[in-house]
Amino acid sequence: MQTEKHFDESRFVRQIRYQQLGAEGQQKLSQAHVGIVGCGALGSATAVSLTRAGIGTLTIIDRDIPEWSNLPRQLLYTEKDVRDGLPKAIIAEQRLREIDSNVHVIPHVADLTAHNISDLLASVDIIVDGTDNFETRFLMNDFACRENIPWIYGGVIGAEGRVMTVIPGKTACLRCLIPDLPTPGSLPTCDTAGVLGAAVMVVAGIQTAETIKVIVNREQDTESKLFVFDLWDSTWKTIDLRSLSEAGCLSCQGDDYEWLDTSRYQTAILCGQDAVQFHHPGKTPDLCNIAKNLSCFGNVTENKWLVRTEVEPGIVVSVFADGRLIVTGTRDPSQARAIVSKCVGM
Image 1 (cartoon, one colour):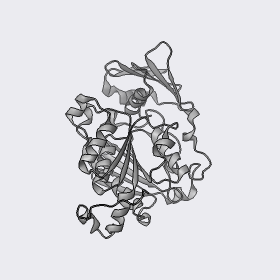
Image 2 (cartoon, rainbow, N blue to C red):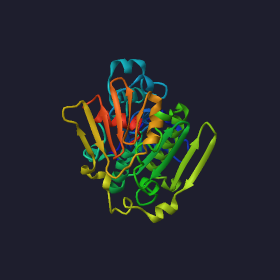
Image 3 (tube, rainbow, N blue to C red):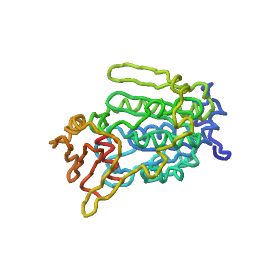
Image 4 (cartoon, rainbow, N blue to C red):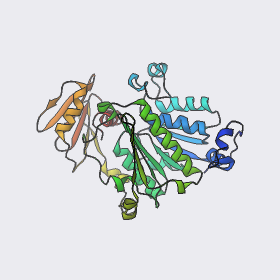
């Protein structure tokens, strides 16, 4: 937590009247430092909610700029932002301070990696997931377990959302639930399956509530559970994860933080080509499923060796049977990684 910081009680009077929070809890919120990784649909909605709740400091990490297709569900951005081309993290700082001039926003225009995570998230009290890929989530999970920092996993695909609070040493972690990185293309992404904006708001609301519980030391109200809902079908499930937390995993036990190993990321700019290659040894992609998911972008070339399609003008994604992925049309690894995350879900 930060040093003593005061807040305007008249501003938060209704929140303070909620007996689980009170003035003492509001004071803790004003002193808290929350890291939000990814400031797209989910991250921006959660950032707005936490700012309005009175969080003292927000670190915002995002690698992208706003696009037209973001506007239906990403609360912080406007048509002018798309035309101006400023990074999302920079826009977020400005908009959040317009909501509450007392909030301290630390923007980082960066791709979170094993190389920079310790620097970017070293001083936060809790981490909130606003990402769109499991590679970054596994990285956050290992970092949080190693540093004993709570974090809130959240995701939305279509009308389905899920949220899980990870408190190292108390609850199951993400690797207890999902031991290995999903095979590239095995899961849908927002770009292939779409997303209902209203579902984003529900997940953001749950993430905000879970974050507040942890900050005000109401961890007894946070259990080892996975919340799953489908807003379209009006269904809600709460999955008890206590058996997983009791069994533990390599991350929970402190035996293996493989996602913090900087050598595992095999990325290369291909010599003489306008292309970036990613290689995940040991992962065999389901080419048939990937071809099906990528068909929403247009014509797909598919054979037993690879799947290839143009996902946007001048940008071609090729997925190979040996686990390699090549993004042609850019020499920027961060841009290429963002494209792969959106299209293949790596």
